[in-house]
Length: 107
Image 1 (cartoon, helix red, strand yellow):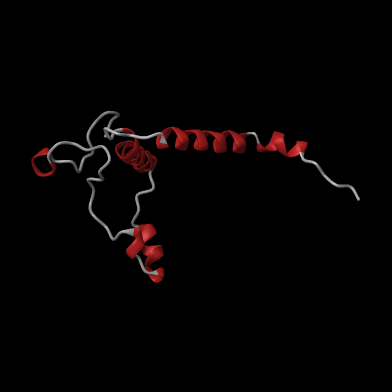
Image 2: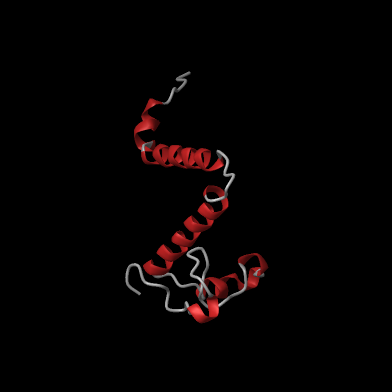
């Protein structure tokens, strides 16, 4: 699959219009229904290639957009979510510099 191509599992005659938020691969047991003893086997069945991870991130992004950004009466929630996510990200990347500015009690 090259950049911009449809997934190999996608068949327009079966699936209809392409939805970037949908996984077109073979269906598996949802994580919420996996028993503790089956977690290792369930994780072993996951595709861990960089393309698969990028596809999962892309599907999550599209699902988030369909839920919060694209509705006709979208509220202010996506802006707050992006703000909090960016604040957390920049805090984490600057943590090594910020930890030197702590106030300590020396007694």
